[in-house]
Image (cartoon, rainbow, N blue to C red; front, top):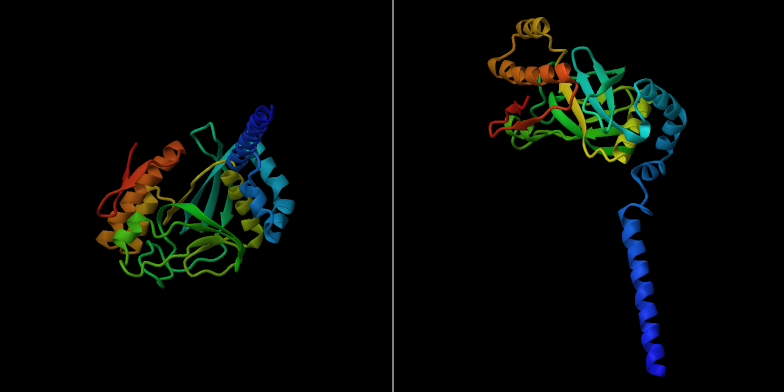
Length: 263
């Protein structure tokens, strides 16, 4: 009798333990886990950005038939035009839709890629958002993964530089500043895309809008070196693919640092 009670008690305890373990696993996977948005909203500036900009962002996306709860985003920067474009799509789509343009409110350096620390250049190439700073010295900021593989191969091997951000305020030594007000909208859009499961938010930075006549004119005007012209021709291929399809670029970087695009 006692043995039977003990066996039943052990069985009940084991069943309870297994149930608790299952709940823990489920919670850690998706049910009880604080999502990315929740974590970001713990910061005062992010909370304020949502209060000010969320409704407007939802409206802009809705006009393109994009749900904020199913949205992915992509950013395109043009240095000569000092323009940063926001593009978005539903996660089930391939093509991105143009949403809005933001002006750079300052620009350092000149046309051409960033190649070393302290050159004050804004990078040129193909990147993605790799960090969020909700307590930035420049209000809110989105970091990009400079130096990427191409930059590490083509730039200074010891001191290529780093800490390149899209941020608020209007000062820069190689970043893309868009004012405190505008970064609020961009930042919460990036939070939503990440919260929706987008692992990498693409950021394409071109020296200019690379239409053929503009590209030739800029090369001649700036007396671009052969190495710079060669690099820009790679970016031109990416620009052409992007503007033709409005789909995320499919590319690799070879052992020499060249971008290789798959059509």
